Length: 113
Length: 116
Image (cartoon, rainbow over all chains, first blue to last red; front, side, top):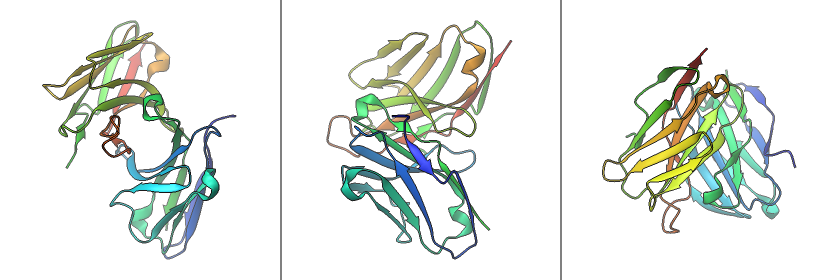
């Protein structure tokens, strides 16, 4: 297992389009997280899954954002009707427990033009 | 409202010396603290953590100190090496004891530069 994989690495989209990102966590990790990072800021928490259940959502996750984790394995994050303010690095992380820290993927960089 | 603050955007340290990175927090519900290191174009990498029941945790060249009364933690790197040059993020969670949120709150990061 090579770690947390995110696809694509980069995405450029026009304002108003929908985009979907995929995250494949480390296989034995039952916890999966999505974060967003903009320039000069630390990562900001978006949402958290334990197995297939979405247990927590940040208020940053507007109704244009939706995340799923069918079967408790990979996860997708969809942004509908993208806006320029959605331009950011979207990071996925997984863990077995908080005490293990998280393992982050390399992120998907979204640019909305 | 920044609940986790890293007030030094950058820090320059000579190779072989001690690097001290500081972090302050405001939320008294935080009970677990982590440090991450980030290189450009990569995701953050977990370094070391500490729970609120401890005041020190050590792992090799890295030591984290927690002062709960001051709501302050610090990361010491001894000795500093060129490969330590990166952005370091402090993060906190209110979920370790099982009663709070599981997401992490990150600071804005400190760019550590190790000078040869």
